[in-house]
Amino acid sequence: MQDIPARESGSGRVHVVIDTPAGSRNKYKYDEQFATFRISRILPLGAAFPHDFGSIPGTRAEDGDALDVLVLQLPASFPGCLVTVRLIGVLHAEQREGDKLLRNDRLIGVVDTPLNPARLQELSALDAEELRAIEHFFTSYNAFQGREFTIRSRGGARDAMRALERGIDAHARQSAGTQR
Image (cartoon, rainbow, N blue to C red; front, side, top):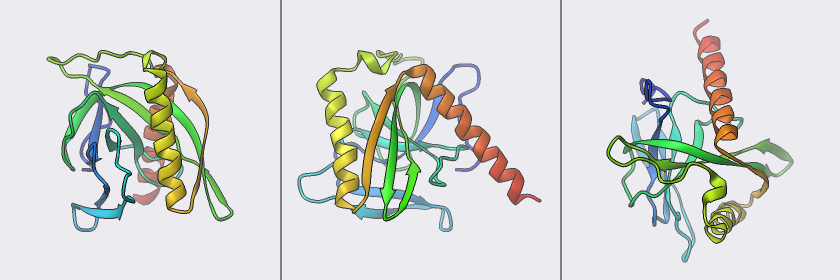
């Protein structure tokens, strides 16, 4: 997956590799050692991912993983599916596990292909109740794992693109450091 660029050339679209499909209680994660997806954890009864969840290749977040993206307006896909999205916003969040506090933002994107253009352009256009449900999912999902997850603020498409640029830069710095 490391050869997939973060962005689709010339379109403004972002590549997202889905790890966990909508409706799944299984949280999958890509295992770089074996080049396949494996079950990372199983959510409790009654909990499931509200939308497809994946990451942007060629990026690095503060937690060391690729940037996380929740992909709206997509019927459930499958682990490993490559989707092009338009980023519409970001949930600025902090995650605490024990005494370790780190930033762990969640980007929000919508499917965007030449035949299926994005219907939403900004997070503010999303139904307020759906947005609250998404925030509740991330908070409760982390609480079940013994982590405190706090959403500090919301940002729009421009904020999400800035987060993407930071993630691309962090990945490039890390890659340059490992090649020395």
